[in-house]
Image (cartoon, rainbow, N blue to C red; front, side, top):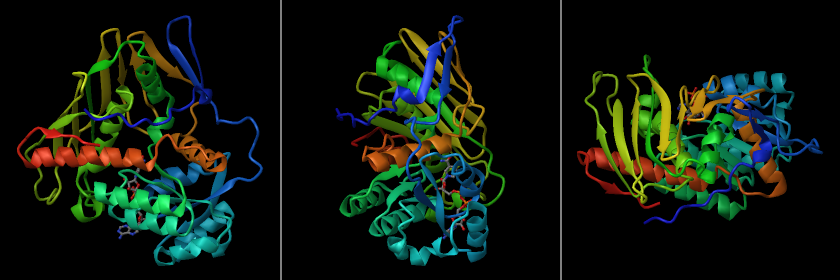
Length: 372
Ligand code: NAD
């Protein structure tokens, strides 16, 4: 049996929760941790100004209390100039991918947030660590466990923290699942299922093995794996079996899977049926225990998440941005020298499961033991 990795949990201080008379759980996330505003906001540099940085992380960095956007790393100087004007940082804090080493000289930048295609995370994280910066890397952490190991080692060597952009750990609806797992109020969740899928309609790097490392499992399936381990209290499975489904659009999904399904087995007999696809629509997770159940759908979106338990709906009010909470939490960890609740080791653990799923699917559904 694999020993569970113990990750620190999100403090309930961040979610002012109470059970209403109707039995609905009311969760009001507050922005964040300390009542006192920080003396100095830490500086964050985004690496890669694509759709996630532009649509989510940039706006989130206007809401954060512990940190602010202080620089960018981009292949386009023009884009960098626009961001500098919008966020009020100097042009000297615009870097190219090949000049990341110069971040070492920039005292305004404490944290580097890597938001490039998956295959590039490793080199960008290592460059940031060598420049002495704490790092957040987007999910999936990398294209292989070996790359995750190299990233973790580089950050350890440089004495900097490494975290993964697992935003759902900072979402109150998912925090309720984590709380139920922690308190075992319903007993252990033994029957779980979840799926995340969307229909990919235009060519992009996400469907290219070289840059994405795989298909929907790397991009979407990782959320189902994350959620499953929230339900088990971060206890990883002992084995996985997986099947790739026949491609309906083989010309589009040339060297990556189109759809995958898998079963995770846990030491206590629990099971989870997972599914992911780039040619379907799913966005849900359900966990059942002897004493009750938890269900979330839509489950993995930025907004509009809806969850209920056998006791009633989970009601969250005053919802802030998941990304703002996530980045602020990491800035707080850096400032107070605390461990991240979504560390590099968690990203590596998830890549171990991803590799087991691919190995099983490649072997026609053979049962593959998971050794985190
Ligand atoms: P995107 O394609 O919109 O942006 C990628 C950026 O990387 C672009 O600015 C591009 O110019 C740059 N880049 C640098 N080198 C490149 C190269 N060799 N090839 C292609 N692009 C290169 O992608 P995105 O949607 O912003 O995703 C970036 C990362 O963020 C991915 O790892 C993805 O999984 C992750 N992501 C996470 C979430 C989340 O909810 N946590 C959501 C979306 C994306």
